[in-house]
Structures are given as structure tokens and as C-alpha cells.
Length: 399
Image (cartoon, rainbow, N blue to C red; front, side, top):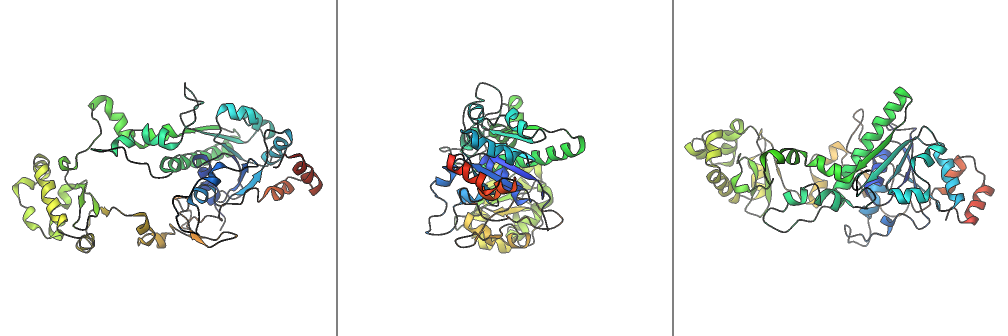
């Protein structure tokens, strides 16, 4: 079944992960995404693979943001390269870029340049710090613009050194934001005939993710740091098991679940303990309540907790390691980790865009392309013949 964006063509002049990952989401949903690369390629291709230390298998840094695309090489510093790009743009619906204004001007890919080739194209800029202000032309990765600046690093570093951000954490949140905005712009254009210029920044994405803390801080003066031993609701908290694993309890309606939790965990004496008899008592005696639950969970392995809480009506979850996620019982039935088969090499699994339409799982359309793999194919689609393509190639316009 074709995806919801079948028939939509996206042209991407972007590097690294943030904006290219938005292209990957659009490709998963059926769009024809053409990744325009310089003759030397997206520098992401050369990034050392620290997430797959085996001798085979995929490079997540390349596959996650670039699967399912077609690669087109052009030297946009040359008139011939820009002319080749213009022919592709004439057939496109969306243009994505991660380049800052000075580079956009140098490569002639500002809004007016792209709209000269296609007045109806939707133009999307992904930036680190936003399209305006004194840092508009300052480069930035998600560790700086999202993790450090949003407050997330501070929140995640209680009582210790700042933690390292998971790879591409805010890049991928930003990619989802871009993909959603593109869908809205396509809808607007279909309804009104008007096109759009879209801006998404990693700093704004990070602030959105931490917006409850940021919104409340001017009024409460709160630091946002939490001491788990002082949790206001002891059953919205983390607990360590005897085998040094952690789990989260997320029982927002504590009174509803307290008795059931204590019964299943084999500590019914806590149900009627006057210190923990209701929400107010558990708050007043929160340190003692957390300590009591620490003792209960600390006497059991994580497997034992799983067995005891099987069928529990409240929400809880263990802290999983990445290697444990593919075998989680929800993954296979929902198509959360389908197989991708590259043209060369062994098949591997890849997380698709996190949505499904008409109860059909989203599946990546293929692995990341080789550099320039589809250049001639795409130019032939624009009406150029082989002689014209050869001339462009010989001039260096195509790399």
C-alpha cells in the first residue's frame, strides 16, 4: 500500500542528522526524497561509527537519517550544478535545508533562488538557534542547542556531572517537528493554493520538550531538580532492584493503586500503615514511604518484580538497555523494528517513522543510498538526455 505522501517529491540540501532525519520520516511515509550532496558527500557519511563496533552491520549515523532516499550529487558552487538542481526543483513539492544564511547565499539556495525554479515549493529551514537574533548565523548541534540549552542536561545531572546526551536525541525530535510542519504546509497549499516558508530550530524544540519546567520557573523559582528520596508522590518514582536494575512507577492516582501495589509486592502491612494511609499521609511521610518501597524492591530481582506485577492495573516500566528493546513483546506485533535489506551487505533492522496509517505499519523504503547513486536516473526523469548529462559530468557540475 502506498504511503500517505506517495506522489510528493522532496529535495534536501542538508547535512548531518537533524534536517536529513526529517527527510527520512517523509521517505518512510512514501515521499520521493532526493538527497542533494556535494561531490564529497554529506560529512555524516564519514562519521566514525561508535554505535556498531562489529565488523559488519549498518552504520546508524548514516542509516537513521538517510534511509529510503535517492542520492544526487551536484557542485552548487558551479552554475552547471545549480542548473541541474533547478531542473529537479521544478518537479518538487518541498525543499529542505540545514545550511545557515551565509552558505545558503553562497550556494544560491535562499528562498528567492529556490522559488525562481518553482514558485509553489514549500521551503524549510532547520537551524540550531532560530532564524532571528544575534545567534541566527551561528552553527549548532543538538547537544548544544537542545540538550545543554533547554535545561535537559541540568535536569538529568542531579548530584553529579552532566550526562552525555544520547546520540541525535533532539535531532530526531526536531526531525519529527519538521515532518509534521511539512504535512501541514502541504495541506495548506492544497486548500488555499498558498505555499509556506517553515523554520524549525533545535533550541525551540528543546524548550518545547522542557516547557513545563521553563513555564513554571519564573513563578516557582524551582530549580527543577528532584531528589528521589523526597518524591512528593512516592509511587511516581524510581526504584532499584536487588540485581542492580531500575524501574519507574508512574502511579499518578496513588490512592487508586496503593493497596493493589502493596498486595502484589507482598507487603500488605504497608496498606494500613497510618504513615501511608492516604495521599496526604504519604506526602507528609514521603521519605519513610520511599524508604519502605526501596526495601521492598531492593529485596527482589527485576525478573521477580515482573512476575509479581504481571497484570497490575497501574503503570510501571523497567529501565531497558538498548539491546533489550528489540525483544520487547510490543515491538514485533506493532512493526516497531522492521527489516531493511540494502543493495549490498546483510539485512538489518531499523526503527521506522513513529506513526502508522490505516493500521498498516510504516516501513523504511530501503537503506541509505550510495553517494550519487541516483544522479543520472533523476536527471533523466527531468528530460535531460545522456549527452547532456555527460557534459554536466565532464564540467564537474555533478562531481
